[in-house]
Every structure is written in C-alpha cells, then in structure tokens.
Length: 227
Ligand SMILES: O=C(CO)[C@@H](O)[C@H](O)COP(=O)(O)O
Ligand SMILES: [Fe+2]
Image 1 (spheres, helix red, strand yellow):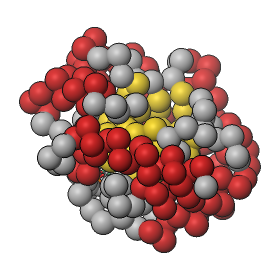
Image 2: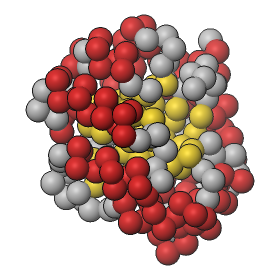
Image 3: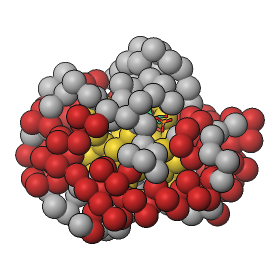
C-alpha cells in the first residue's frame, strides 16, 4: 500500500441503499479508489447500518476494495463474518477493546485467519498516543475520525489534524485515513497533515457532479501530501 498517493473512499452510508451495487460501481467509474462501508451496531454508536450479510450480497457485484469501518462493540465477533462476506479491510475501533493486549491479539487473529488488511480507528476524544508503537507497527492503516462516529453529514473537526500529523511522524510509511466532514474544502488540510486516504460520504453522494467531487477531493489531498 502506497501512502504517498491520495485515495478517495466514498462512504456508502450516503448512497441510495436500494441501488447499492449500482451506486458502488458508478462511483468507482467516477474515480473512487475504495468503497467505505460503515458498520454500526446501535451499541458502540447510536445508529444501526450495514452488517456482513449486506457486504456478502454486494461482493459478487463489484471488484471495489471494501473498506469496512466497524463501529461495533466486541469487534472480535465480526472477524469471521466479514472475512466470509469478502471484506478487504477490517478496521475496528481502539475504544471498543479492553486493552492493548486484546487489540494486538485481534490484529494477529485477523492476519492468521483471514486475508483481510487490518486497521485501527480512534474517535475524536482519543489521543494519538493511545495507539502504542506495537499497535502502530502491526496495522496496515490508522483512521483518525474527524467527526463523532455514528452519522454522515456532520461538520469536519479541524482540531483532529494534529493527531494525523503526530501519527504520520511516527510512521511515515503508513496508510492514514480521515473520516467525517471531508470535502473539496477540507481535503487539502487533511493531506497537508499527512492523511492519504479520505473518506467522503455526503460531499460525494450529495454532489451535483460526483465525478468532480471525487476528483477534487483527491487532487486536494494530493496537493497537501506533496507540499
Ligand atoms: O464513519 C462515519 C460516520 O460515523 C463516516 O464514514 C461518515 O459516513 C462519513 O460521512 P460524511 O461526514 O463524509 O458525510
Ligand atoms: Fe466511516
């Protein structure tokens, strides 16, 4: 995974679920790199969305990289269901785990039992320092939330960017994703801080010109990365 290259992962949470496969492939044709799947269990966050059965039914209809963001309690219970469903990235929240040991054990298990990439996510109130060096060297990606998880369409929290910069300094070779309120206006600052993967839901799916929205977000992230 090349972290010097900007990627855009549209969040399917903002698409029309009745046309999930069509919307997914259309957005890939318009330049999206990954498909971001927001999994919420009504316990870790106050919302209920997509589960593994939806990922399983989408899988045969798209070649897109399914970036699964698990906002769930007990993420260890989801490893086999998501692997069997054909997820490409298993990204879980640090706050959903009781200890550093349990996080390292879960990462090892995903690697041993599945072919999925693995990521760790932190909520706005969690400092970058909560991700230990051992965790940081074990994952393929870190996601720094730029809104409180639970819903699309919220305002970008610019004060999360110093966390991105700290993580980028600690691991220059790591994929760093930002998620929440990312748009053509906020993407440059994300790239400048060191994030190379931008999740964008409403800024892409609610745009009049989705292709332009994807292209602009990608261009702005890349401009920030290259400076
Ligand atoms: O994980 C989440 C929300 O919890 C996100 O992936 C959002 O769905 C992004 O939506 P926008 O903020 O870009 O509209
Ligand atoms: Fe997300």
